[in-house]
Image (cartoon, rainbow, N blue to C red; front, side, top):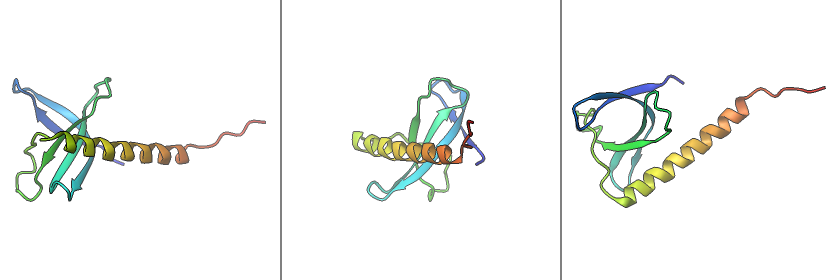
Length: 98
């Protein structure tokens, strides 16, 4: 799967290249979310923001507004990462020992 990236502007106006980990839409909050990591950052920290794909301004990221939304994002991300781990484990070749 080809990696996708986005540019995030920090509070100092610096553009930071980030790898998109996943996107999803929540019917409960009527919002779309993007989860991303800073490219080449070894910390493994995940970031998230909401966006409105119907707004014509998909490039505008919005802050996550509540703890309940953060809980949802964490739950969806954990499920996504577990599924990817399982898929990668299934794809690894099995080595035979004699």
